[in-house]
Length: 483
Image 1: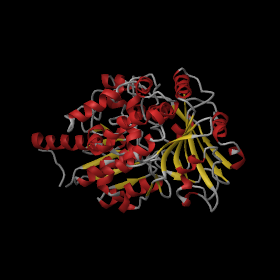
Image 2: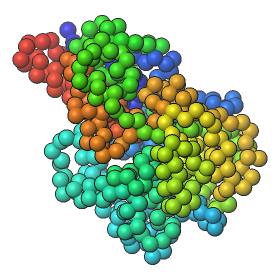
Image 3: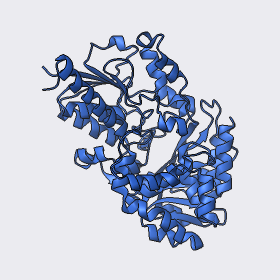
């Protein structure tokens, strides 16, 4: 008789964990509280009929590069990766735009005197991308396969982005480009490790592109659910697990949920344990205020190069970006926020009726921020695309609190499920990482290494740890194990 596994949560990490366990021969059930699986990887008609919007994530540089997803061959399970002509554009007030092309040299050629420094920064990462990724996406505490490469990367990655750009670049354009990349970290640009996000995101854009999923993010989740069922796993939606006691004593339990949620469902088992105190101390990062638009036409960018890009960063100069992120960490909503915007319908006609378009955007706000920043976000778009509001047919807004109500992993609207500061980078969410003091119970959400992003590797890594534990239990105690 096969050992049984329960997985709580059906985001990409939960599904990756479930698939890994099912591949190993376990009888797996996935419990999802919502009516539709996927967590933040979902899509639907948020504005008007016929306009398909991504509920959470929208661009998948790490998704297409993920070793686990690549091995699954999501392209054979219904996922169509669509790479825009350029991964990223960053418009400036002079009417021009910095374009991050997939080719490093082509990007560098548009950065003037900083071109050589840009090539020196990114070309080695791109040339060694597969090797770097294999180490970066593994548990933090491991023997690296490529120690010299990882050490060289780490010397720059641990630096504050503000310091790296000032030492590497002298011009406005390169500094703004890297500042925007680093701001995906949800850290201030003066914080250690903020450079890591800029380096990884820039390298992924050059190495694999930043694709969108044809037809919407839901196709990724649908493919993962299909893979799970093919390996014999079972997906159960509308299944609210309020306590670990509700599960039918599985041999192993993996939880694709935040530490906050785990504290709730494991309250009885964790009572009086120091581990509970460690989870209560876990820090969440800034929230996101997200907007979607149904548009009558493409966004009328002043810099027409923006029409070639799937993603557009809006905030102008490095100094403005840094000020925006500092304000958020000071508990204020920035008046000129750093806005991350995606325009998938320019490259995927299935997202909107003929001749119409969609856009997706968010900015950072303090965790749990209860107020609207619709005007500030749209003002930033209008700044670089005058006439944008005249193109809007309908809009949808989700505050940080709305995001958490829709997906409990997004605590206070934190899309990375935890602040990636130095302490939580090394010990995320605690020194146990995937493990808990409860026998056979593991965490596998983005609160565990390697953290946020749609790559499934948190779930994969946690599943491997669980399988090793089960094997030890079998050898020591003669417990039942997989077929």
